[in-house]
Amino acid sequence: MLEGTLGEFALTDIFQLLALTKKSGALKVATPQAEGRVFFRGGEVYFAVSDTRRMPLGARLVSAELV
Image (cartoon, rainbow, N blue to C red; front, side, top):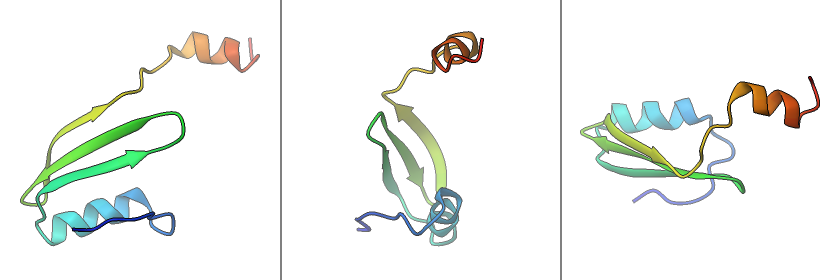
């Protein structure tokens, strides 16, 4: 099992490692605002889920006071 904070690694590097080693399991990705999981089987992604809901572009622009 791999576990810990992987701040030194890009998410793409972690995906490549899991693919090259043909790992199976779940990768939990979390920020203070949201959490998600990516599921691997034999190194390939077969499912992903997130608890965040994407805000529409218009709402993001308004909340950032860009329009």
